[in-house]
Image 1: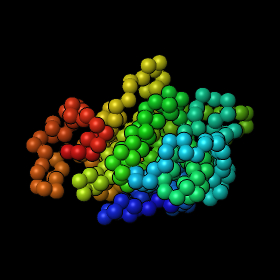
Image 2: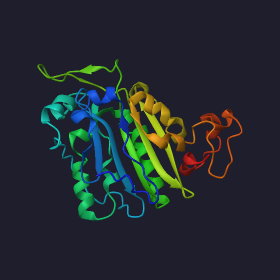
Image 3: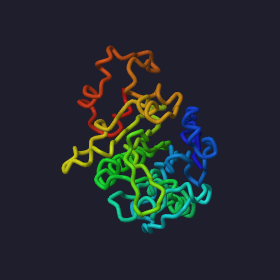
Image 4: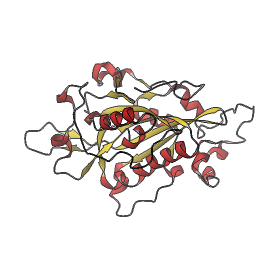
Length: 284
C-alpha cells in the first residue's frame, strides 16, 4: 500500500476529497490498498479518482526486468459491476488501456514483491481510456521523466495520479445494451521528492483533445507543469501542504529566508529559460 512516510524525514499523506467528491466515490472515498499502491475510486464514473504510489530510486530494477504480460483483470476489492473492463471500455475503439500507476514504477526492491505489484497494476481500477497519441507520447514521457529522476539521483519519491472528470466528457458505448462510459478530459500527476534536504512537489497536466492534432507539441516537462492548486481545483482533491512546496506557487518563502523578488520571476515562461535538466523542475 502507499506509504505516506516513504521519503525519509517527511510525511506525504493521501489527498482528501471534498464532500461532493465523496458522494460519488466508492465507500465514501475510503482508500483501497494494494501491495504497492492505493487509490480512491469513483462509483459514478467507474474509474479511479486518484492513485498513490512510491518509488525507491536506489533499488529500481533494470528496464525489461519483468517481461510484460497484458493480464488485465477486475480489482477483487471493488464490485465488478462498478469497473470499466475490457468489453465495456476498450473493445473495438481507439482508446488505449492506460495505466495510472505505471507498471514499471512497481519494479524496485524485493523481486517477488515487485512482480506481485506489477501484476496488480493491471487491475481495471488502475486503468483509464487514454488517447493513443497521449499514451505513447506526453503521458509516457512524463512517466519516463519521473522514473529517470528518481533513478539518476537515487531518490525516494511519492507520486499521485488521476483523471480529470468534467461535465462535458464524451460518452462512449461499445456494444448495444452496455452501460455507457465517459472518457476523461485529461490526466494529472504530482511528484513529491526531497531536494537539498527539503521536500518539494510539482504537478503536471495533459489534456486528451490536444492529441487530436496530427503533430502534437513535443514533450518538455515545463510545458506540462501546472500549479498543484490547479489540479486541486479541477479534481476536488486537497493535497494539503504539497501546494506550499510547489515552485510555481507565487511569493513562497524559502527556508533560508529568501523570497521571490516578483511574481513574474516565478512564471513558467521565465522558469523555462533556466530549466536545463529534470531536477530543475523542483528548484526555485
